[in-house]
Amino acid sequence: MKTNAEELFKEFREHSVSEFFRKNAAMLGYTGKIRSLTTIIHEGVTNAIDAAEEAGVLPKIFVAIKRVKEESEHFKVVIEDNASGIPEEYIPNVFGKMLAGTKLHRHMQSRGQQGIGVSGSVMFGQITSGRPATVITSTGNGEIIRADVMIDVDRNEGKVMNAEKLEGKWRGTRVEVEVKDVTYMRSRYGPFNYLRMTAIANPHVHITFVEPDGTLTILEHATDEVPERPKPMPLHPWGIMSDDLLVLAKHTKGRTVTSFLSTELSRVSKRKAEEVLKLSEVNANKKPAKLTWEEAEHIVSAFKQVKLMAPPTAGLRPIGAADIENGLRQILRPEFTYAVTRPPKVYRGGLPFIVEAGIAYGGGAGKTVEGKGEGEEIEAEAGMELLRFANRAPLIFDQGGCAITSAARNIEWRRYGVDVSTAPLTLFVNVVSAYVPYTSAGKQSIAEEPEIFDEIRSTIMDVARELKRFLNQKIRIKERHERAGVFEQYLPVIARKAASLAGTKQPDIKPLLKKVTGDKHDEES
Ligand SMILES: Nc1ncnc2c1ncn2[C@@H]1O[C@H](COP(=O)(O)OP(=O)(O)OP(=O)(O)O)[C@@H](O)[C@H]1O
Ligand SMILES: [Mg+2]
Image (cartoon, rainbow, N blue to C red; front, side, top):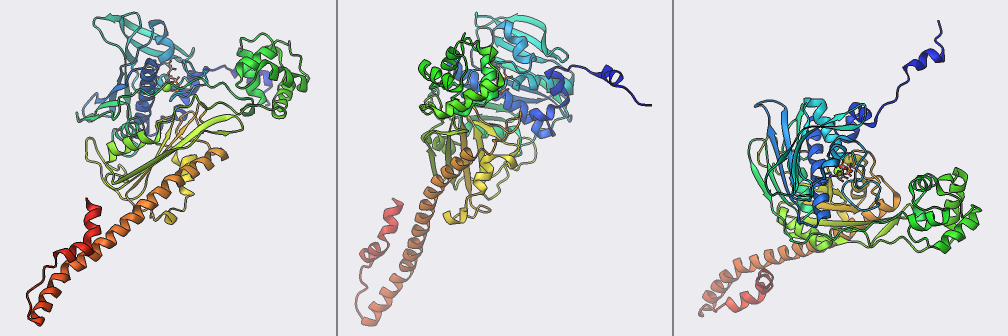
């Protein structure tokens, strides 16, 4: 018997965003026992650094992973910062509501973008351990609150329990999440390497880390300067599509289409807006929310016909070549480092970004982390190590689909005198933008936008050329040393033999030796 539509659609239900991610936690990076734990650290640490920078203080981050029961896969993750904290009334939304936050609508470069990071960790904790997250935070009016938070999945809302005020003077936020079915390991994909990468890209951040076996690691900050805050960067007309325009139109405060275009988009004056609306034959006094799809399409194409200044790029904040070198030196103690930060570029016509790269050779460079257990020494492995970052946050997973990986693979390394399978080499790439095109909500890889790919490739070539110069010099010095070694070995013998043959006194050969091996001593000094 056939079932009719009415019958079938009795099953029709609406689901909340929380319900969706409860079922699809893998989309947020909660997949695999090691990755899930690292994802929690990533979400907590990116929030902590964002918050401290916004508060204008040097970020001091404390991270601990504690085993709840010996020999089990049940852990408690603690992440604490020294930022300004969270007002009490926002606690349920920060930790219990997905797609909520201060960052997703403001067009500014930050580590977080989507408003789903920390609520995702609370959710993962809740579905694996059944336990709420515990939050301690300073609220801004001198109070400290401690509370347990769970997510009401049906409603996508936070439920706060056992809230109490704590005594004392302290500023910051501490989040504790209990998780089960995860593994702690010092592998390339584990929390230890994640924090080490964070330290390299953020020399102003001080990190204290306690591993489950109690091993304490302090990653000291290498500079005392809090980076200047990025500036808001409204969308530029060249970078938007009709749908973007309609979404902006729905939320704008502008009362007419003219004022909407000139307040929400960058480089659009009132006069430009009028010009564009005339070209696209859209009523300039229309309410923005009433714009139709066709009108939006006309406006987008009209913007391509008028002269506009290129998007402003001054709001972006790269790490800077000097600090990349500092970070690499501090952590890897290499023989050679070199970094460049290239000038801003634009992708999709109107979205500004900056690429910077650093290279380190020798010392701890190229030693990928392949340790096995807790607190165990990092196992050295030769070959090139690629460190990927977006807005200074490490990207550890999904390397296959990432523009940084494909650009690095696209380079003919042999031309630069490098065998990537054996060279003690670390390559560092950071992509900075208010609109990093991530390939998924897990934010672990950057889409291969052609302009971004090309720029990454050129930046890597900049640092590779400098490495080649260094390696050539190293080879020359080695050859001179070998040559000098031969002279040092044989000259005294020849001098002695010659003197005895000639029946004369042995000459003083020191000045002569100095002359032929002099360059060796000069280079060493
Ligand atoms: N440690 C913290 N201190 C102060 N505010 C915080 C802290 N952690 C989170 N917040 C606030 O909570 C909001 C939600 O955080 P969440 O990690 O879920 O999203 P996000 O950081 O905005 O974006 P993303 O999903 O990309 O991480 C943030 O936008 C921020 O306003
Ligand atoms: Mg976040």
